[in-house]
Length: 215
Image (cartoon, rainbow, N blue to C red; front, side):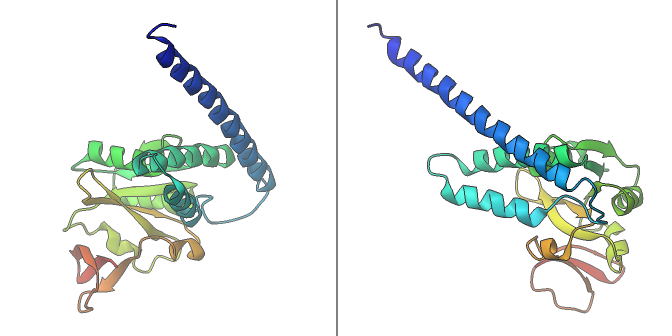
């Protein structure tokens, strides 16, 4: 026996666990490929991205976690789900950031993982146009005096389904896409209200007599 034996044993145990995790991951990828095959000929004008399903998966696992940090659970499963979604369909992240592109990029990766291709838009309008017609999510920087979001008030296709935050928890961008109504109900409730309406939540921006409110 040497003083290194306990350490070596723990390392062997980690190797064993890594092999087990990889085996389960292979099974999950196979299941995702099966879903992709079933949906191959499915006609749907909405995104394959299902925010409500993703949120339910992550929250269930966070609640079950014991010693694993919440941040680790969220980050690992966000990445797994992003990669499995990419096996079904390639979803692009079309983003526009004029003031804080680095902070927004970090926030996008935390929220959407690293599987989706990131494409820089030259304007908020360009990002929204992609989101209306392609398998794409528009992620657009938001400031209190931003006005681009007013174009979404009566848009029949697009919906704001999430807000992205920086490391300090400040909302810095919105995610917009062709999200199903049932998914919207499980997403953060972000509403565009007339200026005279009394919002019950946090005002994110105001422009042209309208208020953007996180309820």
